Length: 257
Ligand code: 6CM
Image 1 (cartoon, rainbow, N blue to C red):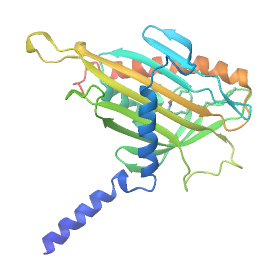
Image 2 (image 1 turned 90 degrees about the vertical axis):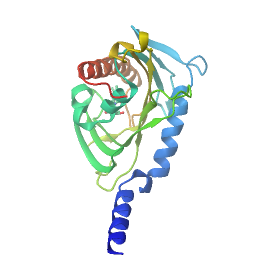
Image 3 (image 1 turned 180 degrees about the vertical axis):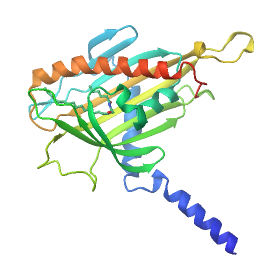
């Protein structure tokens, strides 16, 4: 009986560290699945205008304002050879490497480790003249989902970031920074080209299809033209830098399917 109780305690402890038991879970699950669906919709309809194109990368936006604030939704697609969707999403989620590729960041704090796949972040972003400096408070969640092609090959991966509140975060009303409101997702699908004669799959056989969607409300006054100019410069810079970083990190490592 003692052994049974001990085992039960371990099971309860293990389950309590799963994100499914967290008060935020319902929202995390809902927003992540909504974003997955949204990312999969093409850009053919819905008034998407292309604003950047380089190699395989295409970036689209829809100009939109709420109370005079620019909240232009952005959708980007990119194709990267030699990496998997799991690798791409792993590096996008992993706080240890964020400073290596995130050029808009001044400081990053993990406010809560909800579980292995979910973290709550407080980030202070670099100030862009002439607007006030911004911070962002959001949960970040990574998961794999069955591939749309219904194959038994590699699964599709998603990272979803969404604004939240947190006891440990400073009040934004009287705070030093203006808090942005964001919903961001990165969805990555791995395509494996089967090697000839049943040979082992190498990085030469891999292609990763990346979709990145972002909606950021600047949260307070920011001059519209300047903000759009910042986005036009920063988003392509981010996606190029990030995907190149992942390629470089992975090229001599075993494949993480
Ligand atoms: O998705 C990206 N990064 C993730 C990890 O950091 C995460 C964070 C997104 C927050 C982005 C907030 C940017 C705030 C920019 C300040 C605006 C100031 C207004 C000045 C007007 C003149 O999802 C990559 C994000 C790439 C952003 C370009």
